[in-house]
Amino acid sequence: MIKGISYWAFAPETDGSPCDITKAMRRAKTLGFDAIELTIDNGGRLSLSTTQKEAEAIRQAADEIGIALKTVCSGIAWECSPTHPDAAVRAQAVKNAKKMIQIASWLGAETLLYIPGMVSAPFVADFIPQPYDAVDARARKALRQILPLAEKCGVRLGVENVWNRYLLTPLEMRDFIDSFDSPFVGSYFDVANIMLYGHPEHWIKILGRRIFAVHIKDFKVEVGNLNGFVDILTGDVYYPAVMQMFKKTGYKGAFTAEVFASPKRDMPAIAIQALKKIEEM
Image (cartoon, rainbow, N blue to C red; front, top):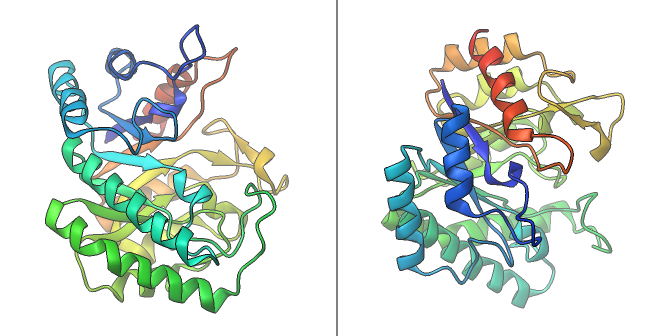
C-alpha cells in the first residue's frame, strides 16, 4: 500500500506563510509516508506562477528525501471553473489547467486531480446554479481542450467525484471518462465525498481500472454537510469493504490522506496511524 499525505495537512510557518515544501516532505518521510501530494494554490508555495526550474528543484529534493510525488491537487478551479457561465472565465480555467499539467509534469507526477466543473457547490458563495446539461457540455469541451497537453506531458487527469452536483452516479462518471477514449482520463476517487449520495465500494467496482488515484478521509452521513468530515476511521466509511473492492479491482496507486492542518492537532501523525490500520484490512 502506497501511503500518501496531502500537503494541506502541514501547519503553516510561524509567520503565517504556507509550510515550506521541503520541510513538509521531510516530515512526511519521517512519519512513514511513501508519497506526498503537493498542491497548487493561489499564493501558495506552488502556484500558477511556479517556474520549471522551481518545480524541478522540488522534484530533486523529493528524490533526495526519498518520497514520491505521484499526484498533484488544486482547488483553484472552484474560483475559476471550466463550466462557469462567463466564457472568459472558462477560457482562463483552461489556461490554468494547462499550467497545472505543466507543473505536474515538471514535478514528475503521474496524476493531476481535475475538477471538471460544477452545477453549484455548497462552499462556493454567491454562485448561481448552472443548468446540468450546459455544465456537461462545457465540461466536455474544456477537457477536450486540455487533454492533448496532458497526453503530450504524460500527466493523467483524474476527474474527482466532489461536491459539485455533477457526475453524481458511478455509471455517469464511467461513461464520462470513457467518452474521451484516452488512457490519460480517469478517476481521482475520493472515498468520503461519495458518502453523501452513495457507497464507495459500489463506485470502485464500476470504475475499476479507471481509478488513477485515491483520497482517503471519512464522513458522518447523519451530519450531511461540510461539518460531517471527521478523522479517518471515525465516520461511516466502511473501510473493510472499500479495501476489499480495491484489491478486487487491482488498484496499485497511492492512498492519500486528504486531511487539513489543525492548530492544536498533529494531523499528519494522526493520518499515518489511520492508514496503517487501513493497510491491515
